[in-house]
Every structure is written in structure tokens, then in C-alpha cells.
Length: 310
Image (cartoon, rainbow, N blue to C red; front, side, top):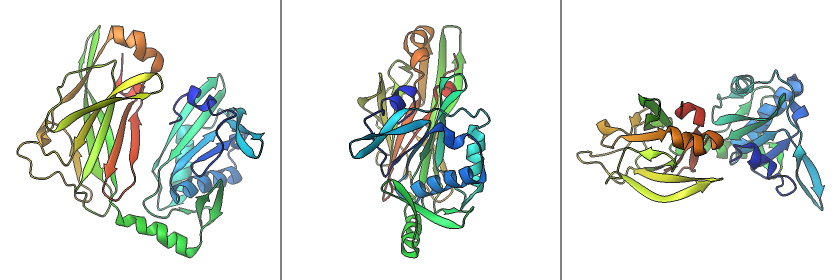
């Protein structure tokens, strides 16, 4: 959601902290101390043990009547802080190891950055190993959890845990045109068999497609993200490809949605003209949304630099 400097700046004076959103000035990461490590892990596990959410480092707060809303940018200036470092702090200090998050770094100016941490809802209760406590986001605060609340969150493991990613395979690279094959991949990381799923794949309309919609892949109405229109394609276990009996996924099973599994190849064609006119300036990611029985919706994206190599 907050994947560009413009979307972060649009919060100023309007949006307040909530169950799913936390603002922190850049000075919170001025030094990586035991205290700042503990606060980071506490915030992340609190979101994971609630409904998920977003932490934005590099934005201040201001008072608007009785509300505390987003203020001016107060960027992170500690150049030693890296995405890999923050990832290591989180994964090495959570039990079980929590990996359901992604970190985006947005450049404000030389030596000034905004760091956005998007946290998924956890599939069980995650403990802060630094103080041996469980936390949960309540309103705009992170509070220690009681035993009954921990047990309740642990019961999430009874729901399926299916994850998706978009693999990119180069098919053709010429001076004026590139062709990339997009391969959606599903992986069952939970303990229960996944019987029913639906995956939306959103592709910038500025690209050309080397595929026509079929019985097993349906084109839905276009959607918009910021300034760009996306074409939406639906893959679903409810529309079985010919000669396929089932698209269920057993625990630890993976499925690539390719010709071998009954789905048409999805090729993205980018011309140099399209790249220069629109794509180069906006750098749009590829996006996906995943729906599974008895589980919350999941969303993700493949950054522009990972799929377009003009």
C-alpha cells in the first residue's frame, strides 16, 4: 500500500495511527541498540499476533484536535541501517521464526530514507525472544498478551496457509523488445490440505500479453493502482484445466501454474517505446491477491526491477 514516497507523503495531516498502522520518526533507528531491537521485534510480533499492519519509519506525528495524525517526513538518516539487517533482527528474535513480512526502502534525498515494514497476520502466536513475552496490537498500543489470548491466536494454525509468488523467466531479449514469462507459484506451508483457492494476478496494461484468456484463466475487469491501470487475471481451483482432476495442495506441496499443470503460458511483452513512455518513470510492480478457504486474504508483489530488465 505504501510503496512510493507519494503514498507516504499523502498521509500528512490526514491519516492517524490505528490498529494496522504505526508511525515512527527516523531517529528511532538512529542507533541499533538493544532497546531499538526490542522495540522493533515487539512492534512486528504485536502486528503479527493481531491482524497484521504496517510500520513506517521516517514520518512524524502532529496533533489535529483530539487526533494524532501523520506529520512531516522525519527520514531515517542512519546509513548503516539496511533491509538485511532489519530482517535479521526480526527473524533471529522471534519464536517461532517469523518471516511473514516485507521491507521497502524509499529514498527521500541523499542520506535520507523512509523504511516501510509490511507485516502479515501470523498463523500462530509469535514470541519476542528478547524479553520472552507475547505482544498484540490493541488500538494504537502494543500490549502484553494474557494466556487465553495466546491460546486463541495459536488456534490459527487450524486454517490453511497457502503462499504465492510470481516467478519471472526471460524468454527473449532484443534491443527493442523483451518477453518475460510469468509463472505463478503456490506453496502450502501449513498443516492442512488446501482444497479451494483463487489467485488474482495484476499486470500493467502498458505491457502486451502473449496469451489469450482461456477456460482455466479468466480476465477480470481492470483495476488501478495509483496512476496506472492493471489487467487482472484469475486462476482458480474451481475451474479445472482439461484432464485435471484436482488442484488441491497437500502440506509442503508446490504447484506452478504452467502448461504442465493445465494453464496457458503467460508472457509479458515490453517494447522500448512503452518502457520509456510509462514504465521507466512509474516502475510498477506485478501484483497478486490470494484467497483461500477459512484464511485471510494475502497480497504481494514483484518489484519492477525484478521483472523488467530493460
